[in-house]
Length: 135
Image (cartoon, rainbow, N blue to C red; front, side, top):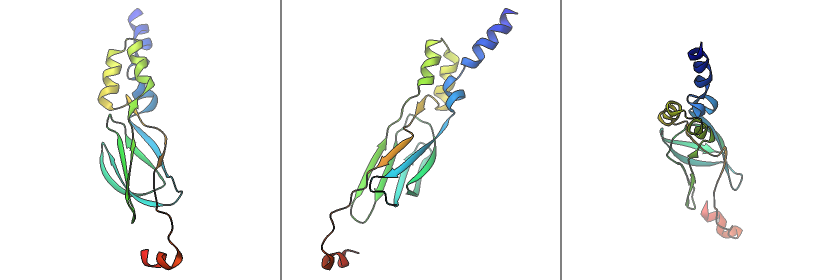
């Protein structure tokens, strides 16, 4: 009977971050100027070309997400840092060695900010007579 109770008490603690937050996450990417722009996004899963603002689904990983915006003026790079998920610490504090191993192996021990503003800089506008030649 004690073994059965122990299983019901310990089982929920195994892989707290994996169970509570999962192994993937939605990250909302918006632009600093509020306009739509092309971007290249580098994640642990690979590289993808897309337009932002957009919500992307990424696999959690220790690797940071890199967002590069290439417009006709310049290239801007925004880094979305990976940080430790608080649920992972629950495993360590409560002695869940197996749970922390599960979280580590699945990537669930990491997380990203939910909302990220991607920097998009544009030069000041030239007078109209010069602006027509820039386009």
